[in-house]
Length: 117
Image (cartoon, rainbow, N blue to C red):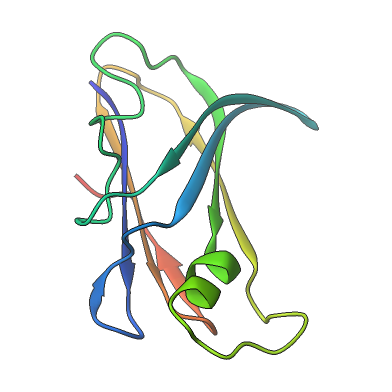
């Protein structure tokens, strides 16, 4: 049923509008670029799911979130190097007939994720 993501900025209590996100398919140590997106005002892909119905395949994937760039753009003073810069989430899709939603809750100092619905 597809793959989607959603990012919430827990420091400001808002969606992470403008954050850059990159999706890769992974095979061992090899990561193949699928797409680059900029999150919309709701902290989501403006084009909808990253993979739509019937497009998602069983396998392993990586979402890379530009957390450091996002918080710098919001005017947050970060140390150099920042504690969190690129947050990479590696995950597996066992049953592509189900929907996989990968949300990220993030601040400059912490993040949390889970398999959502």
